[in-house]
Length: 376
Image (cartoon, rainbow, N blue to C red; front, side):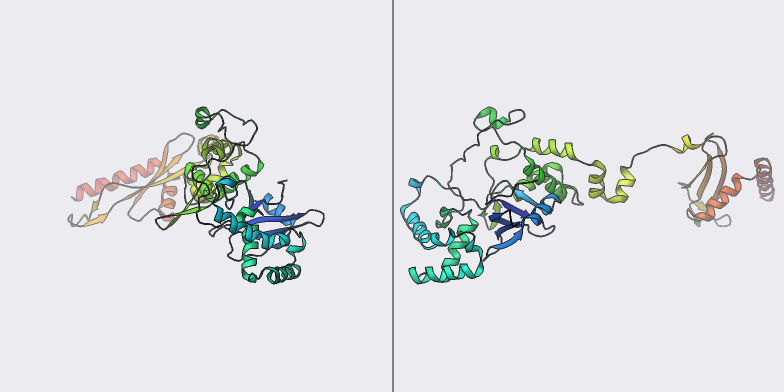
């Protein structure tokens, strides 16, 4: 079971629509309750959900637990934050600190309203601003630095995030070979669940994404740390490469857990799978135990055009040649030539010929040809 802790990010999968992100603000395991806040909404407020409901959604693939917090702000050292930024942060924090520390009472709508009125009377700050500060604090991971002015979207340019301690499984990546401190990450149950959801959304579908594009789409949608505006387009910002799963890791776990038949049906449909990928478990030749046990019928449109016998300038069409083959001996046992397209009537005529005595049939055709030649 995936562990749900305070500040966990739950991403709810909405196929065809934008996924919804929620941050866990409070966990009450005894009463089977968690308090979450919607990170996509413009003016969200905390709501209470059942803990078992979230666990069920995670196990059924309806949601995933994000390993990278897209709303986490990366700040430089305290001394590197401009003084005017710190002053504004501290002023906002002074207004809400007595409110946010009253957990879980602050998540009760009525009690929270009374606390905000008290702060409004004490500091003279409009209630809407107090609500704004609370939302920023909660959405930013219950971190006072979330109250810093958001003048730049990229956090601390040029600053690398620290690497977690511990040994990484598997062979060293190219990045790690160049810098041993950047050893990459291990794939745990939470990341494997993200892999499964990504394969389901971006690979096992009719869009026919290659596996590498599926991997890149997964990084942009489920591992980004925010977005930046480039020429009017919102572009996802990704953490450093050593803090992301590699394509090799993604491909390994995909190959380890894939269901090839299910994947092919999802990508090409049942008809496409049956036409191009279904297993061939035997042949009709193996099923034939002797001559006359199994027949096969084939209809082929000949690559010639027939003309009218009375006016050779008029084309009457291309003949359709039906043949009946004995599967065991591979001998042709019947035939029929007609001008109508491949259909059941032509197949019946070919079968009738297959069960006709061939000596009398050939004698009859010989006499017909002889009479035609004498008339000519």
